[in-house]
Length: 67
Image (cartoon, rainbow, N blue to C red; front, side):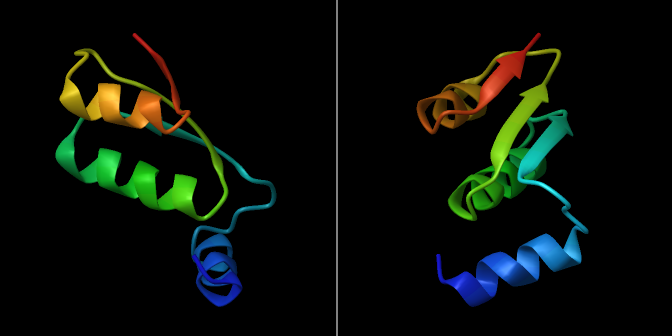
């Protein structure tokens, strides 16, 4: 991901640091956003009531997921 896109993401989401916590990270929309944030260099954490294939994929990218 280019520096310009990364800086636009940080500005759009008003990120002061690179840590983001996502609630409902196992859903199709939030998991996609989480993956974009990981690609932008953020440390992404999240939680979901159900553990599914989206959660497994995100964990393979280094995302920490709590139940």
